[in-house]
Length: 283
Length: 283
DNA sequence: CGCCAGATTGACACGGCTCAAGCGGTGTGG
DNA sequence: CCACACCGCTTGAGCCGTGTCAATCTGGCG
Image 1 (tube, rainbow over the protein chains, first blue to last red):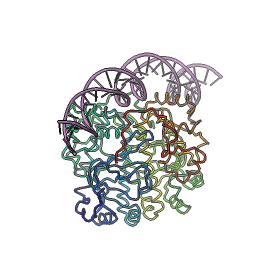
Image 2 (image 1 turned 120 degrees about the vertical axis):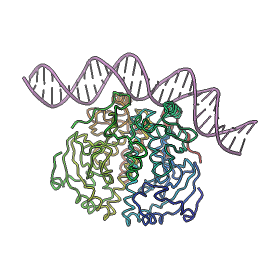
Image 3 (image 1 turned 30 degrees about the vertical axis):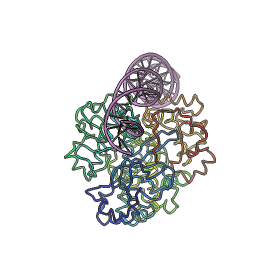
Image 4 (image 1 turned 135 degrees about the horizontal axis):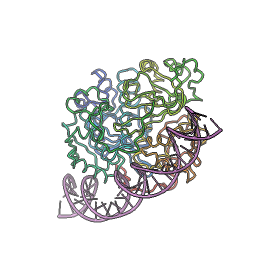
């Protein structure tokens, strides 16, 4: 990683418009400055750099200002599971706020810009600045929520549905930080990365991608995603972006991107029925 | 749910020994009293009661003092995914701290005791009491960590491994709150519940359970789990309880329960090799 | 031009799902 | 106290989605 002086990149630091970190929604200029005040460092990191290493102590949180990162766990026999993808504005390793040793690694998927916030300083800032504390809470809870959706997807959806769901989620998150280009965006993941994120093999990711393409729903090629039929894609996988808690920009989306309302589904679900669908809870 | 006066159950409220909520590790008597001070209610809930309903507004957090609860999401076509199991001491719906509407429901799996903490009051308490704020942070982060492991399990482990892993996790969590009986514990889940938690069908859960039993590793019968060979069970599924962050009682476990050290695996892993094991990240 | 990582394809195996029947407890009403 | 009903557990047979293995293709880069 190339260390840089903070001020050299001051102009590239997050602003509500350019890089909307989950945090920023609630932060005004004063709070934002306070947050920047505790940054120890801004670094340019190239693809493949490890920001955090599973099991090694870590003294600071990393916030992505630009580029992509992946949080992953290696199991003892070498299987890999990617538990989160970070896009600009995301905190890569929130757990570092409470734990010195993390049980995952974080690696850059593309070149990017990273700020580091030393745990200690952030801690004291949170104690004195309730707005920032709240913003961080909202990050933590949203992460939880995303993780929950992630697990549900892996556990209960078919390969195609999982892929579609991930592509939908990423579009919304990227649009929220101004990194989407209409219904298209850059996705610097190999099919193997996608496989590890979705609990599939890369071979099957490839085939599922082709299936989605043959339905004229999405094209994923040359590290770029183009969604051709958002509505159908959302229906196919039962996507509803509510869990992302992008309230502040929801208005924008309900205008631009047709959202699927889970409470009042329009027409019959197009999922194939499965017998292991659990009965609802009585009472 | 039967509403009760708080004081009627004062003696049954959490103490470090009896019911160790994730919180309690760090809390002294004063902080604990402060926390109890903001409780609005203690209720006896019977199995099947919904504490929280997906999509409905919720004004208070629920902490389980006794019994079991499950957090689950229903997908539009009726598939169900259980994203967390709560045991005594756990907060069932942490998200309620930040969001008014949750994207999951919480249901009691057994009869139990539940305390309710109104969001507002807890909010102000956290602002004034940093110890409690920290304790809640540690809850939130640990949840994240558990969710991550959950997803990795579903995505990358076989049915047997998943089951084994869950049973191991539950033993450690229950032991931490004094609800385990050596290597045995009560587990008020049907096989269908287990299936929804593990991303399987109940039929396959049944068969996997039999497989584990035939290896003399665990018996799960009549809502009771008995682990016969902890060491082998841990090795079978690559379980390492570090992610549960039960530091304070780890000492106890390293004495009683042989823990599997992931850094220095003893002997070759007994997993069947799989070709989709991802290459480690270079650099 | 040659190399290499990643994408693609094909043939095949298998884990886990589906469907369906039967079993055993337990609670309830006659 | 029995009969019935219901729920959850068990078992079997067959199928299909996804993994496995391995070869080939492609595009970017030195």
